[in-house]
Image (cartoon, rainbow, N blue to C red; front, top):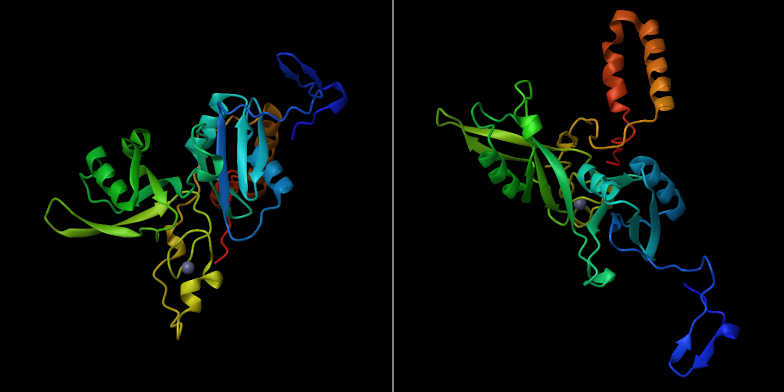
Length: 290
Ligand SMILES: [Zn+2]
């Protein structure tokens, strides 16, 4: 909060003059500001979170993170481009808790901004031949949640084995796993959904934000038969996050050096290492509490 030096406060004919102390001005510039919460019942260690998010995002012009009220955070960027990268490459997580963010709207009180939706990149696997089309992607996205974007770059690639669509998902609803589509021969085929950067979700009820060990539905069961309808297969293999600022030259040299050393060690059998290094992409590593 701003502090006021009462000794300097003087009553003048036209009104008060407040002499604000230098450096205490806590006003927030809301132009490039996101408001968010973490999808978790546990409290967040705020200082660790600030460090982790700044490291994951690496905004070129910086970001200030403040706790507005308990559990509700403001992410104030110094440049619009940094904010757009964060929105486009999400969802993000801290300590396995998914971050739900929305653009700050000056006309809505911060507590009244609804934070129940996350934009996911969803991969549609086992799509029958001939159905890789935006019209199909839009329909499927609106079944999963609400259509946001069709990834033309991915979906026009001859080698790509799945369709990729951006979908706005309500985190209070069970995750959609699959649906059926008719192929050209008139047969019904099952297509499977995989979510990129999926946080903790429950294998019992399919809802994000808790593991089955904390599931209310499981606690309400007379007998848990152990049958689960949701599985870890809903997680997509990590991809490189695009749109992120490139690594600094030093980091690239370090990485190239490490790769060469590893290649020298494992020689031609290095294929498994390449897969491992993709999994170790720090931006997309989200653990599993289930
Ligand atoms: Zn549950």
